[in-house]
Amino acid sequence: MTDYPKKTCSVERLVTVPADVKKVLEGKKTATRRNGVYAYPGEVMVLEGKEFKVDKLYAQTLGELTEADAKQEGFDNLEDYKQSILSLHPKMPWLPTMSVWVHEFSPVEK
Image 1 (tube, helix red, strand yellow):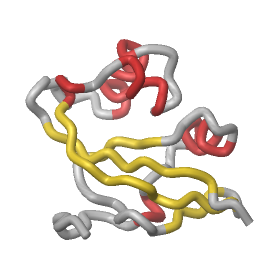
Image 2 (cartoon, rainbow, N blue to C red; image 1 turned 90 degrees about the horizontal axis):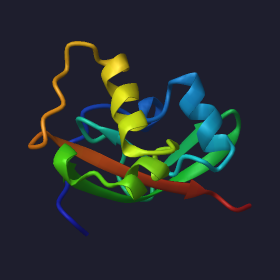
Image 3 (cartoon, helix red, strand yellow; image 1 turned 90 degrees about the vertical axis):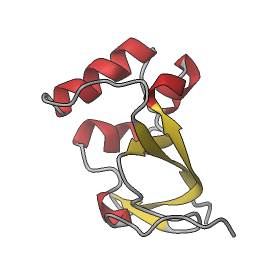
């Protein structure tokens, strides 16, 4: 097991924006980036009664983000993702060296 830092929040807070919840439920969003650790691999997030398991957790800088990462977040391209983040956090600068935690997840098959 990898040594992860202590969680800064809980798995229940991993995806909370209604538009993002909808994207997860539709299978369009399979990852979320946060400034802290909200869940460890194996933890389960429940959205509208449907379960999603956290598969991977890793650090990434904003400068490392790719178009594929933006699609994983449920956006058509990196610029749309960037503008969405900046609209949610108006005072936050978009710094290429800023590190975030990537939480990748998938539906739990019953």
